[in-house]
Length: 68
Image 1 (cartoon, rainbow, N blue to C red):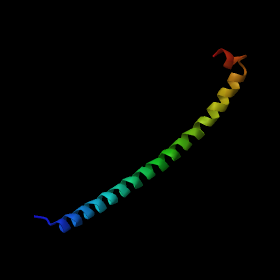
Image 2 (image 1 turned 180 degrees about the vertical axis):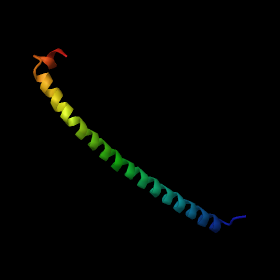
Image 3 (image 1 turned 120 degrees about the horizontal axis):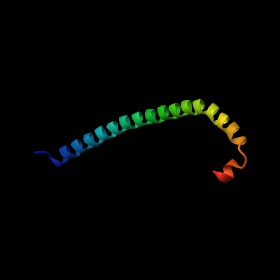
Image 4 (image 1 turned 60 degrees about the vertical axis):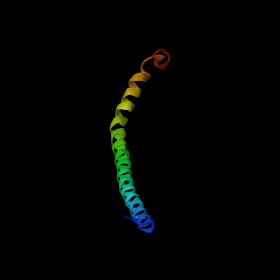
């Protein structure tokens, strides 16, 4: 049987373990956010020339944005 003092110690250890696990999860989430941002930037650079090309084509179509 656990005494009240022993239960408090066990509770404190459990809370510390949860805190450590949550910190590890947060590190992984931060890495994910960084990698997603880098991947997004990479593909935005790939799309940029196509947007410019599309802009040139759209400029040749009279009243394109009014009629689309």
